[in-house]
Length: 253
Image 1 (cartoon, rainbow, N blue to C red):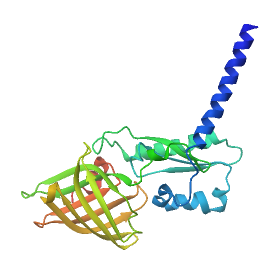
Image 2: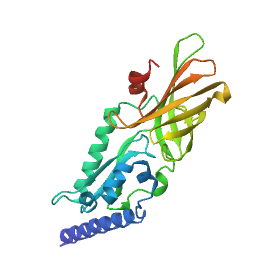
Image 3: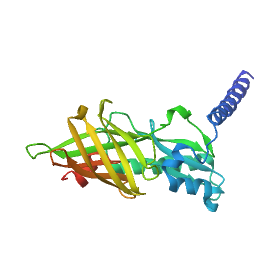
Image 4: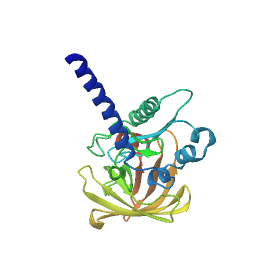
């Protein structure tokens, strides 16, 4: 009898825990079409809110690398057939982790443990809203030639509050791997995917001006900016790719 009573208490506690967890997830707030995460990824927003097939799915899930969307990628998944919400969540996290692993290690840009997790499930936030960034974050590498002609590199994290390509002018900053601000600058768009930039680093000791281009798709959406220092030396800045990948593609300047 005591054993049966104990099993009953355990089952009741498990159900109560599940109900509490669901209630907690819902308490994080309802997702909206104009939320920052959807503005940053318009293709995902179109699928999540507008596409008739995916919008009507029984379960809709978004997963991103955390903390604070530590690199600029995402995975959205939608139920097919009799898929449960948990199965769709697992699929989104798996797809997100695959994209993250394809980028390679982020340790040269920042020291956080960047891992994918579900942030929105069935139009409800399942993480506290204040854990998501109000700014866009992404790894950055700046390649330039020093006065002797050797290639130097600065790795870190770029952050910018507006939408590059939509807003006329977007300010950005670059932090080194220790989280110290080392550069600040401005992107000015001439079209949705191209424009001009200006940047000042190390208290004005290093400046650069030039043009930028937004690239989508493989290996990841990223920005490549090319210009020159005040002394006429070439500069390349890559936002959105880890240092190793950025160096392999653009490190030759």
